[in-house]
Length: 252
Length: 309
Ligand SMILES: Cc1cc2nc3c(=O)[nH]c(=O)nc-3n(C[C@H](O)[C@H](O)[C@H](O)COP(=O)(O)OP(=O)(O)OC[C@H]3O[C@@H](n4cnc5c(N)ncnc54)[C@H](O)[C@@H]3O)c2cc1C
Ligand SMILES: Nc1ncnc2c1ncn2[C@@H]1O[C@H](COP(=O)(O)O)[C@@H](O)[C@H]1O
Image (cartoon, chains in turn blue, purple):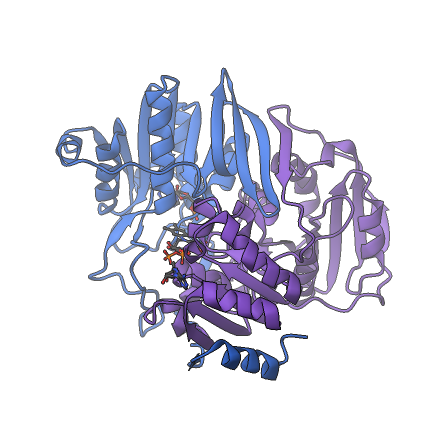
């Protein structure tokens, strides 16, 4: 079975983002980019399936500019077998979840994986949509926000994190799964693997050649910084804290 | 605009977040129908019947909908979609699981986590863990939205007289099956509606120590929350997590103990009305959003608070 993993290049989660003065977006220059943390977890899960002998090949795929090659190389260094970049011209409007889902659908139809793994959410747009959209387009079962998965013959036993606790589902393959934080702890890429990854196959497909309409359905009118919170007060004792809570009337 | 709001419930009671979403639906449209798909869900329907702001409650009561599997709900909702200009749900794990697939099947965008409705096609939503707010305009004929509960207050109930209509069940998928669930059964209020939240981080050190927080929570009638680090360390279950990728909360009072205040955590609680932070590190970023900060060992502070609250 092949496993397809979708990975996105995003501003690193440690970067404190800044909104551009012209309100068109956030500052992208001179900031660190990394693989979306949830996608790193998805890659790790695919590698574990291959190491357990249930998957033969791990293919990583990303949609974005040529810069996303670095994200794909990172996933290859972690252990993925080959990579596909759906290339978008550098300055075009960013791809929205519906467009990404359609692009991934096409790749899935060509590659016929038994399982597609994604992150539950990209930490830049915080959409939490692509996996669900893709599952619906392919008409495959979905297992979203997975914290555990076990493969049993042609089906998947999957535990998902829901608001009230945990839910377990059985999904027939092929299926789409999105990874939550506690699915696993991703490994680190070792230097020799980073060198080896440079020789692994990375296929570039221009989005313009796919025939898929990726025009955004949502027009971004502006991006603004949220209003700041007024500065707080440092207290020096628990008594003072109790007094303040009393004043605020929050203690009934 | 005609809106269909998808209700979330456990077949007994409606989730409060659906009522927050009802407020949003009322801002977006002039006629709001609510879909209740469940099994033996009379109580849910009954509670909605008198809720103000609902035109019609559309009910499917069938064992196929005992558990809300996205695939089966989508098959049910899709044929109804063309009657509406908007499909809405709360941005809970239920809504996030269900709505994107509806949007992609309709070939429209989804607008997730909406915090403000500016007009029938223009919406504000947080991005980058709430460090920026994006205003988007939809060009689609049907708007598919999830809305953030903390941004829309629940309306008074009791004046409505919604019509109740019954829908037939739709076909279901054999390729996905419900196996089981482990729900935390707490007598404390739900995080999403609690007036007061007592929250703990890695600084609590152990599951046993969390009992201290729970004691304080019981005194205050509060819910208990946690940082990701506390959940990952196994101090508390996953559904306690507050943050960018956990629950979004905005109580009157949020008390944070031993939480450093990473942006991913702040994303989930910085809309709280009053934030109190106790941390022994004076440079902890949580103090930047706290209204009241106390640099102290939480193990000195908690017993005193428990005693005096
Ligand atoms: C993709 C992604 C998503 C994430 N999503 C979330 C999310 O939704 N929610 C979330 O919370 N995090 C999330 N995180 C994790 C986040 O980045 C932080 O790692 C996490 O919030 C830290 O938790 P913490 O504050 O409990 O632990 P730490 O950062 O380790 O802080 C512990 C604090 O306790 C204090 N302390 C220790 N002992 C005491 C004592 N005795 N008395 C007083 N203070 C004490 C310390 O001074 C320190 O400030 C996410 C991370 C990633 C990468
Ligand atoms: N441009 C992209 N290229 C590849 N995968 C993506 C892209 N955008 C989103 N994804 C995948 O979809 C998941 C959810 O993203 P989102 O719905 O945008 O929050 C991510 O964690 C990725 O696995």
